[in-house]
Length: 231
Image 1 (cartoon, rainbow, N blue to C red):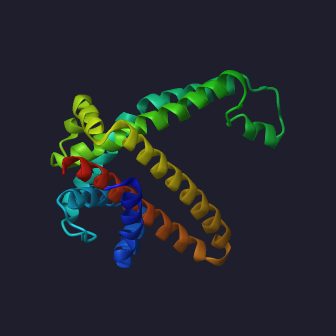
Image 2 (cartoon, rainbow, N blue to C red; image 1 turned 120 degrees about the vertical axis):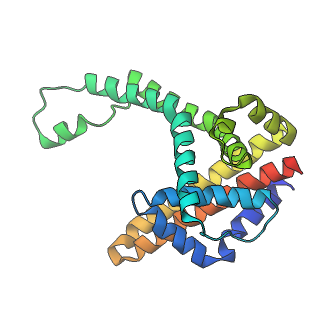
C-alpha cells in the first residue's frame, strides 16, 4: 500500500460511521471516562491489524478503559524527556523575569516563557525532541497493541527499529511527515473554526467531531503502515 493509498483510506475510514465519531467525541471531553477513548484508539489499530475495515464498536468498556490507561502510561514515558526540556525553558524564563514589575500584565507575563536566549533554546529542543520521539512512539504504541497491549512491547526498541527497517526508513519518514502535517494543519483549522463558532454554540460540535475524526484517522493510518509491513 502506497502512502497515498494509506492516507486516502484513513481519511475515508472515520466517516464510515458518524455515530462512532460522535460517541468518541463525547467520551473524550469527560474526565477519567476519556481513558475509554484512548482504549478505543487502541481497538482501531488492533482491528485494522487483523484485517477488518469496519469501524469497531465500543463494547467491552472495562477493557477499553484498561487499554486506555496503558496507552496513557506509554505516552507519559515517551514525553518525559521533552517535558524536562520544556520545564527548563519555563524555569529559565521565570528567572529572567523582572520581579519588581507591579502591573497586572507584568505579573501575568511572569508566568509565560520569555522566548529569547536560553529559554528559547530549551523550548526549541523540546519541540524537536517531541517530533523525533513521535517517529518511534507511533510504532512503539502499535507494537504494544499488536502484542495484546503488553506495555513492555512499546519500549522494545530493537523491535521498533526492525519494524521501521522492514517498512523502509524512506517510506516511513515520508508517511510520518505527511501524517504530521495533516494533523497539525487540520488541528489548527479545527481550533480556529471551533473557537470562532463557540459564540454560536456550534463551535463545541466542531471541536468534538473534528478532534474525534482526527484520532480515528491517525489510528487507522498507523495501523495500515504496520499492517503493510506485517503483510
